[in-house]
Image (tube, rainbow, N blue to C red; front, side, top):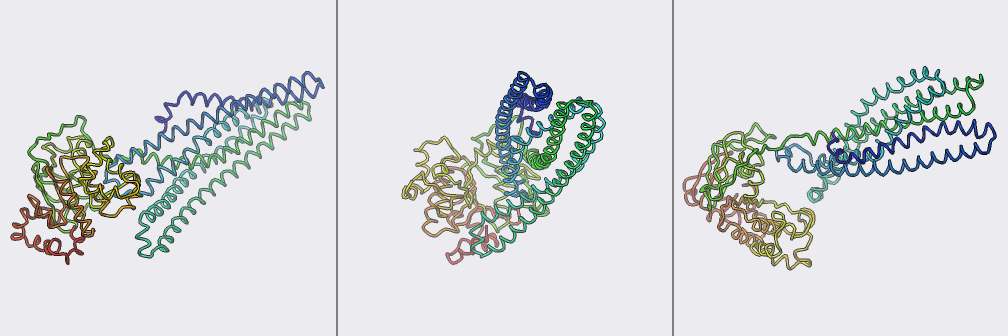
Length: 582
């Protein structure tokens, strides 16, 4: 799974492997150096031999130090670079997924995969993996040296090694499953925290801090239980492996001691033998401990892989058609049907036929849930219709590149999305290369320049997370300035003035008029002024267009429209009910 990200670092990987072999080779050589030191340097009481033995041991130590430095440096460089690439690829994949996928996805879980899971894999790649590789080499190299020191040890090795490997395999599989579950439960904790912090004002306004604490504590308890289950499995595996290893080493030492007493091996050989025996024991113990980390990382890697392999993107044409900006019709809906995946039993749109001509201003009205916002979503190709065809400038949306569709359309939602950066950056979000003059001009047309300049830092003012430092009317005008700067041929406007005070509403309405002038506009209408100024009004009911015409025509011909007009457009006294009509 990670090989495409490792491939660019092949040279470093080779260097790290060489350094790893250098370290392992130095340690394995040290055992024979110890035997030479004991038998030749000490046993023969020759100072010159002792000097050579000490110098050789020091040379091995230098080789070990250099190899360790290179291994640590290269492995960490590879790990950091690869995980940076994976994080970037993961985020790029997530933002390319269709909005339909996010209907069921949990934001906290997505964030946990990008942050927590990648951090676990990063730890393994920068530390655990190289340590595991070194210990594997030391284990098998040590076993070979033990057998070479005393061939009869091979019998003990043949018995001990399978007994050690078996629990590593059996418990390792269970540990991987437990690690995956533990990561899922940890993601639940992130979900609870993210949802609570995002809605903190609502939580505090309703005085439900205790309820959210209880939910968070329950998620933490579940995460703890899953983590403890993983820890118990890891403990069992470590305990069993270490017991078997040291039992085998004890048998090896007993046989080696018998050979020394019988004169079949020298004291140096026994010293070397003991050194390698404990090297094998230490390597096996370390591997049993590292296996837990590796399995935990495997669980995290599974979660990352499942995200990267999620295929929830809308198909794009291999040879996209070109938009005809001079087309007489701005957009056309032909017998369009659509149902959201989360509520597929109830269609959101049923057999809608609609044509909007270039330069026309069309208003959409209807009760909440009638399908007005769904028409916007389909026109932006957030979803494909389950039936029928949608055409933009005469071309089927499915034959156009998504980038071309969304470059052609400007959206001003009722709840504008602002980012925790400056006012300038938020206005220029759709046109990052815009000049300062163009940004200020867009702000003026959006009736935003004056309040921006009244702020201490002007256009460099930070708006806070989701624009929390700005009022509702100010946020709306920043969003309108963003759309003006982008200058889209087709404007989708979810008019948002119902929640504003009279002064802010007047300013926003003036900005909207500047935005809609001389361009095709489809407006979800909340105000009488918008309805009256529209060239046509479409009345939606239960996902279908039930009536169309001007304000005067619909007042006469449609009882539902008259009812909505009385509630929504008639008098200020009716304004508190507006929110129920969207």
